[in-house]
Image (cartoon, rainbow, N blue to C red; front, top):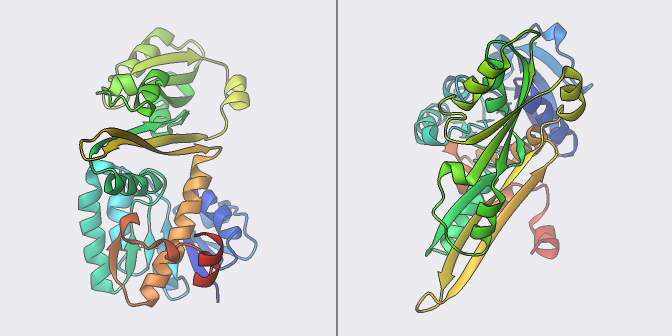
Length: 328
């Protein structure tokens, strides 16, 4: 019997989840919930229906796992704990500093309701988090490094678009090659924020807009650009549509460390991603962990979980015998 999936929020990530569900034969998309007028939302799956978010609670017995595709800044901190009162659910909350508080809020709601929830599922946090844990367990005398990109940062792109005079913008996060090379060589460098990444913004300005002011506002924006070396390129709308319409991303999580009685041998563990579509890859990770959440709930497990709590065998649509035969 298929695991019945619901999607809450139908932007880039919601569509990415929908694509992932299509390619997992044990998953079935039942419903998409939106804040918009449902009649205006066209989905790709013929067998699923679109509903207003206010109708979600009425369908709690028809959905096994609800995948929440909202923003970490304002949506998920309130939305996921509320959804966990009625659904097994999963989100991709990615504000690292606020994960402990978000976890506690979702855990309380899910336990009280007898539901199973999961937060911060994607590639960072998510796949990168797992690889940090494995690498720290194996090389407990070492140092962690994370490099993001080259890829589009949707949050930084949105920040650029909010500036007066900007029609459109894409911002790419770019690792500094020299810094990456030093880490891979096992040199254990001490790196500042500015030394690890640069930022490149492509901006379409409104006609007559003050480009010098726009560039200055971008480069001096606190929490987004002020701590980085940033380059701003002004381009036409046609160039933006032609060259920057995708949402690629990626990065590497690297741990360097030593073994031996006197620490005489150096080692480097690296896990890297190169993604054509950030939201589609994140959607694929969410779909795999939705399967795990359903299995855990079927076993009577409740409360909130993270990627650290899920045994790998729960993620895949494969028997234990096949896993041992083909993946070990």
